[in-house]
Image 1 (tube, one colour):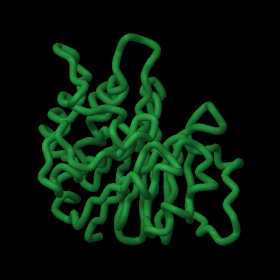
Image 2: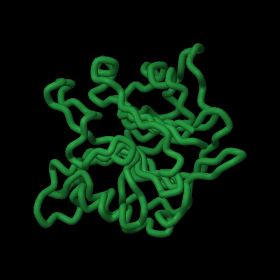
Image 3: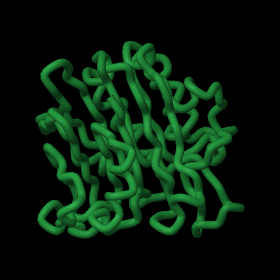
Length: 236
């Protein structure tokens, strides 16, 4: 099973070919247009199932599956936590719980991580499950932690770790939070302003099946977005 997450900077229909050339099974897209506007060219592989959430028809959160994977909405989506969306992904062999994420700055003095922090404290029952994935653009990094702020990135990571949920990138590449060698975002697309903002956290049973985690190179993706995609392979 391969999962890819990418903030495409809008107009995914014009950029999907680049990501789909990697043959993902599950795709999480931030800044994705609404499904009725998502008209792919004939030569582009069409998803088996699709989900979209948002209030801007040009810029929401999209999830797409290929092969025999399907998507079901879970009934307890709390929309107070903008763009932290619980979904069920299934095929004939397995069922996964996915929290699809696109962290956005709230209308307050809080940081980007506040909705993620609140969501992971709210969805405690989901976080106890096997086959759990939290995937997307967190818009946060330990680099930006501030003293005494509960929703600091490091606190999110520590809370998840206490539940046995770990970052696939940091586990596979033996990297420290805030010291990542592979940026996923380049401010103003400038190679000299790199940050690691996009993550895939998983439960321990999936961590044991992890085969590879790779981040797209700046030179290959900068014409399409200020983010590079993150792809994760599991032995599933």
